[in-house]
Amino acid sequence: MYRMKIIFLIFFTLLFFVSCNLEKKQVNYIGKELSEMNDRLCKSWNTWNTRSVLSHVLLPECFAINLALKDQSGNVLEETLIGRDHFGSKERVIAGPHAYDGSYTELEVEWHNIKLRVQSAALKNELFLLISPLKSMPRDTLVIEPRVLWDRKAEIKIDQNVIIGQTQSSTIKVYINENKPTTTSNSLHVALDKKIAISAGMRKSQEEIEDIIKKAKVKFESERLKYSKSPEVFDAMQTVLAWTTIFDPNNNRVINPVSRTFSNDWVLFGWDTYFAAYMLSLDNKDLAYANAIAITKEITSRGFIPNNTQHGHKSEDRTEPQVGSIVVREIYKKYQEKWFLQEVYNELLSWNRWRAANRDIDGYLVHGTDPYDYGNSKSRSATESGKMKAAKWESGMDNSPMWDDAVFDTTSHRMLLADVGLMSLYIADCRSLSEIADILGKTDESKELTGRAEKYANKLQTLWDDQFGLYLNKDLVTGQFSYRLSPTLFYPLLAKVPDQDQASRMIKEHFYNADEFWGDYIMPSIARNDKGYSDNHYWRGRIWAPLNFLVYLGMRNYDLPDAKKDLVEKSKNLLLKTWLEERHVCENYHADNGRGGEAETWSDAFYNWGALLGFIDLIEKGYVPSPQLPLKDLK
View 1: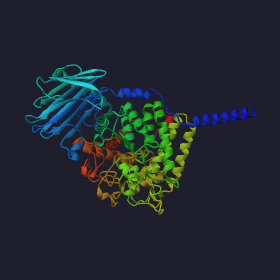
View 2: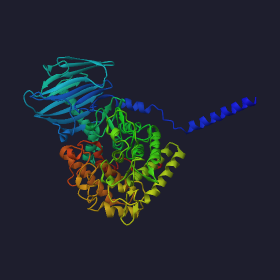
View 3: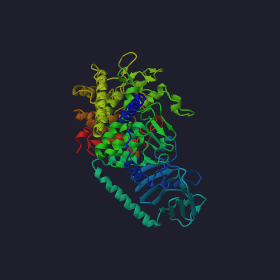
View 4: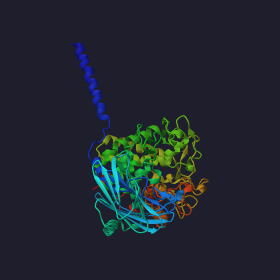
């Protein structure tokens, strides 16, 4: 009997221990909202194929009509992308309107002696295309290639001017309004001597197709009138986001990579994708949710959101700047759907805890890279994991002069530089996530996050140089401040750490200092008087939209009306300079002349986070909820 009592006592003790631990374990939200949203997004005709903006694809069948160009010499342009003319490619694309849902698109393509306009309208499962030659030579042709993409199964037949696609679920008929096209076993060739009309679904005449497309364009343009206070800015932002909306066949989802030219099948970067989600929240809830959830669900086994992720690869050694909770908080303000918070909360909390546990040196946050075995991969991650270069990548500002003098500890694999920007973003992340925890009723975790924010806020104050009037990075080897100045040193405004007097000094002595950050075009990624500024290469002196954007959010926390106004206006004007001239939204910009998209400086010409320069203006005009509004005050 005594033995049986002991056994029962042990059993119930173990049961109590297990049940307590199960209560502590984070349980992921399981609901139908995400799958329903995915179903809404992954359907109909659109430019889903990341490899070409002239590929119109029907989802979920993955049936595509690819448009290619063939010149009189027999050269063929199989795939077309926006912005590649700056990278030595021969095609030049002018990005026109693009509805997110593909209901209307328009662009112009110029290649060799061919120039044409391509317009489309999609209605339910019907597609209408109108190709209008603007310039061509005899024997220049349009090549129409029906395809089934991404290893899906279907049978395709070409019968004179009709294409028949038989998938497992449907029959798709495509009609070309040309009586005698030249056909091959897998394509049709039509002379570019007149307009070409194509319809998928119901057969339509050219006149009917032109009318359908005209009405689709009018409807699209009418919906934009609600942004009449900043029409050109909205046009730039919405256009670059819509043209970078693609389908990820590996995960059956719709996402927005920063640029098609960066993608093979698909690729997501950390803070880039969160910023895209925030911009999309202005006018497309589903895409905003989809992108924020997609990058958050890419969390690594170690518990952080990766620097980048793509098919077959994920940066398991490093993360990127902590903006996820900030963005999720702002998206929630707009739509106030709790399931969205529930989908991402556990991962955001894991990331927050991971940073403090793995990137803290004596209370300061630093950048680093954890050695990771990437197997047989020949990726940059595999060759640089555990080294200084990968730690720089974790900063998101890869070759910034801020890192030139920093020491890298080859034992801990940490950069021995207390980083003002990193600590500021982390404090803001803690506070944003604490508010989210309160909404979800997670009181203990909210207190945990608030406590962590206060801890690092107190430590950040030790990086204030009162004589210089700015927060400064600190060399953790020598204990000396670093005077390699970048816009990240204004991020304490975002963390609400300075008092008003400190904030005013930062602006007066440094923001408006023409030797540092002030000028016709602002803000350079390193001070103008830094020896690295003249390099004008990537993060060495060029203007980057995310830096302006985060500084702007910080300015909103203080009484800095003139500085805020100047940053808004100069950022907007910088965006519109290249947009109005070339219809480009650039990855980064020259800080002396405002140009963007130059290949030699590593500036992609059609990169959606460049639109953050204009999103500042849209926030300022009240098109999204105020970033200062606490979640508890939502109505």
